[in-house]
Every structure is written in structure tokens, then in C-alpha cells.
Image (cartoon, rainbow, N blue to C red; front, side):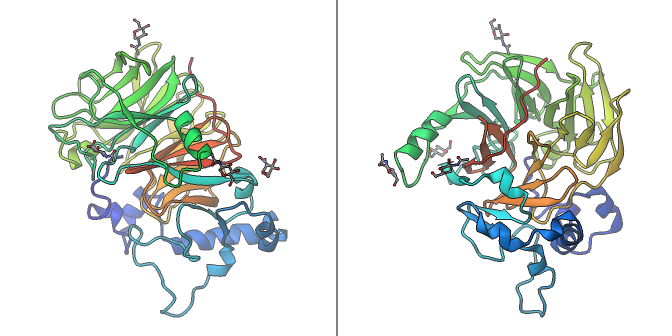
Length: 416
Ligand SMILES: *[C@@H]1O[C@H](CO)[C@@H](O)[C@H](O)[C@H]1NC(C)=O
Ligand SMILES: *[C@@H]1O[C@H](CO)[C@@H](O)[C@H](O)[C@H]1NC(C)=O
Ligand SMILES: *[C@@H]1O[C@H](CO)[C@@H](O)[C@H](O)[C@H]1NC(C)=O
Ligand SMILES: *[C@@H]1O[C@H](CO)[C@@H](O)[C@H](O)[C@H]1NC(C)=O
């Protein structure tokens, strides 16, 4: 998303006693207290109970902190620094300087591996150049991404398009090898045709192209577009309407194992003043690129945002849904997780089925049942991230990019 309303906007962002209807509609957000109580109960009454936190601390990788959920189940008193905001104060009881790995469950250690590291590799304090649409192209070892569309420091609005940039991971490796103290690798901005307007999400490579999803700008339609990662960066638009109506402002997209493209449509373009009033509800669609048909698979959202599938394609994460095998309609909507900082944005799934989401304080990681395992704690918002090479996670954080070298690997891209 490009959410300029994060701190000041609508009911999503007022954690203090939201009315029940908002609670049900914003299931992924919750108070830290409830989240961690539920979490602690799961860990310490279940099979994990025999593994003591002390064991975990013995083999902690560098830059990581283990926090026993039992240690903060009761803070006690009124002087213990209870958080008073889900957006402006984060849960960092050890006051560790970010970036670091915050471990709540020892299973996070197998995601990190023994030699995990995390570092900032690019920054620009005046420009949110690294918002979403992270796509790793292995052929050139580059990561592509879009700048913030219409939000803070995005330098884009009704009159100005956002941009797609890329960094080379070879540059990152060279800077690391040179022991540079503050790494800031060059960002190359792509020169794209006018058909790509306010890119918000992306995935791929898909048919050797970047698969971008755009919010549109003013009268220019939101669209799904293939972009050649190589110059001249020619574009093929795959979809730009729903039976003649423009979408509101398309947000994010994933390729399902069936080969269909599933995507979310939200109202951020309107809220951020670069799109007209919405003509359609905020909902989730499926596009079949073989037949050109588009159908709605889930509706009744406040703001659907990132989307991802379990490895077998049977579960969709936005909330959690089952994907009906016959119709691909999303059924059995349920809480997956309720995050404690900011709002959940881009979603990715790793090879073993763990779910990653960009949140207010960094990247949160859950097992496939929704238990919080740990965080890539940045102390700042991340809207999305992407696996690059096995064991390398590239995290977009608006004005910064971080690279984490860990043990986990991402799912191979699906490109029928
Ligand atoms: C971690 O680093 C140590 C020391 O450099 C090395 O011996 C070991 O092979 C590394 N382990 C992995 C999994 O990379
Ligand atoms: C930051 O981004 C702005 C806007 O694109 C650009 O003018 C400026 O040169 C960038 N600064 C650095 C240090 O790259
Ligand atoms: C970087 O630091 C490592 C470990 O301190 C050292 O072995 C290596 O020679 C350094 N490399 C350069 C290019 O200075
Ligand atoms: C770009 O142009 C090349 C050469 O015509 C074509 O093969 C390729 O499919 C195009 N890619 C896109 C994304 O339009």
C-alpha cells in the first residue's frame, strides 16, 4: 500500500477501543497484549514447552535477541513502559539498536541459520524510493522495486508518476567485501512508457518479465502489466478494467500454482488524492491469462492489501482463506495473525511455508498456523520484501533497503 493515512487516518489506525465491526474487518491487527498472551499459551502448553529459552540463547546468531514470551506476559505496575501506540512505539523490551533479529520462538533460529546477518545497503533520506513491488531477477542478480505511490516522501501524486528502480546484489556483495562502513549501493531508475502509472505491487519474474500491478493516476487506468527487465523496458498491459470499469487502485498480485493471477484492489489511490472516487468495492480478483476472464474471489474488506499463497495454493493469506479447488473462490475467512505494529502490508511465503509480512517495525514471520516466530526488527516501516538467491532476503523500507543473509529460501517464481 501507499498509505499516507497510517498515523492519522481512518479507524484502522486507532488502536484504542475500536468498535467491534472494525475489529472483525481488520483482523490482522491486534493489541500486543492479546497477541502475545495467545502466543505464550500456544508455546508453553504445547510441544515446545520442553525446550527452554536458555537452550535457544546458547546458539543465537549474531545480531539477534531471544525474548521469552513468558518474560513479558505480565509487565506489572503502571511504570513499566506499556506501549501507547501501535504506530509510534514498538515492542523492543531489550532496547536493541535496529536492525536486529527479534526471536520469540526457537524455530526462528532455523530460518536465520547460525551466521545470519542484516544490514542496510541503500538509503535516501528524502525519497521513499523502495516501497513495494520487489522482484528478484536471478539472470542479472538484481532486485527491482517501486517508489512510494502517493504517500509520504513518495515524490509522486496526481501530477507526478512514481518510479521503478533496481539495485544490483553484486554491488551489495562488493560493498560488503570491501568492509564499507555505511553501504549505499547505486539505484538505477528505469525509463518506462506512460502505460505504467503508480506501480504499487509486483511479482515474478513471470514469462521472463516483471509482473507489475499499478494504481493508475487521475484518469489513467490501474493495470496489470508485464515489463521487460532489460532495456528498452517495453511493456505489455494484460488487464486494465473490469467489464469496462476501471479498478480503484490495484495494490498487489501473486501467481497461483494454477497459473491464474490473483490481485487486490483498494482505495488508497483515492485516499491519497491521485485517483477518482471508487467505482468498485475493495476486493480480491482472479485473472485467467489464458482466457482473459476476471472474477471476484473475495469481497467485504476494509482494505485488502498484500496477498500470498501457501505452497500448495490451497490457502490464501490476506486474512487466511481456503482457496476452493473447483471455483478458486476464497472461503472460510479467518484470522491468520493480528500484528502488533502498524498494519500488515506485502506478504511472502518461504520454502517451508512460513509467512512473512512487512509491518510497522519491520518484517514479521509466522509459521503456517499463525504463530509469531520472530521479526526482522528495523524500527521503521517495511511494506514488502523478496527472497533473492537462496538465503538472502531483500527488505524494502521506504527510504532504505536492508539485506538479510539467512538460511531460509523463497518459493521459486511461478511462470507458466
Ligand atoms: C558459519 O560460519 C562459520 C565460521 O565462519 C563456518 O564455519 C560455518 O560453516 C558457517 N555456517 C554456515 C551454515 O554457513
Ligand atoms: C535522493 O532522491 C532524490 C530524488 O530522486 C534525488 O534528487 C537525490 O539525488 C537522492 N539523493 C541521494 C543521496 O541519492
Ligand atoms: C574485511 O574484514 C575482514 C575481517 O575483519 C578481513 O579479513 C578482510 O581482509 C577485510 N577486507 C578488506 C577488503 O579490507
Ligand atoms: C518486449 O519486446 C520483445 C521484442 O519484441 C518481446 O519479445 C517481448 O515479449 C516484449 N516484452 C514485453 C514485456 O512486452
